[in-house]
Amino acid sequence: MVADEAVTAEVVAKMPRESGVLVVEDDPDTQWRLARMLTVHGARVVGTSSGEAALAVIAQWPADLVLIDQGLPGISGLEVARRIRQEHPGIPVVLMSSEESHDLRLAAKVAGAALMLIKPFRVEVLFELLQRLTSAGAELVEELVDGGDGELAPAE
Image 1 (tube, one colour):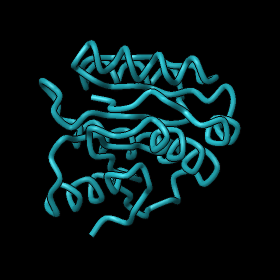
Image 2 (spheres, rainbow, N blue to C red):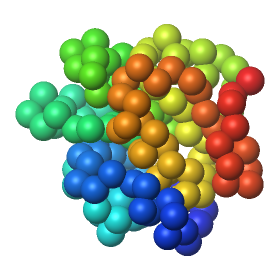
Image 3 (cartoon, one colour):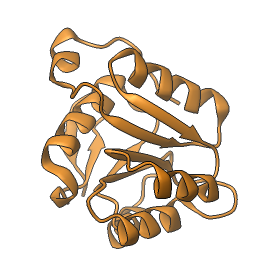
């Protein structure tokens, strides 16, 4: 769940306008909140609640960024990330999870996720990730997590 909706003007100013974001989250409240925050600040958002639906959407709508929850019913977030990166290598994928482990970070990297975001996270972190990923593209391979204070910190 997103912990804080307060967004600084500086972070919002840096966020690319009209970025297309696919949000893949099975919790309706979390999906709604993510979509709302992104839309309010200029992104075009499509939300799905399953990996199967996400793959169908991405085949028709090439998003600029995909946010995927790891704990999806059916196809896992890792598998969705792997398939998207295989078929659409130019689209950055961010895996979201409430689990923070070295094994999951490694699996996310192997699956092709550009980043891993640990829930709950601050909205400022989400916007900074969006700005960094859409400007750097899929070549950004550094894993980042929320250091707990809203700052981005390298994953161990």
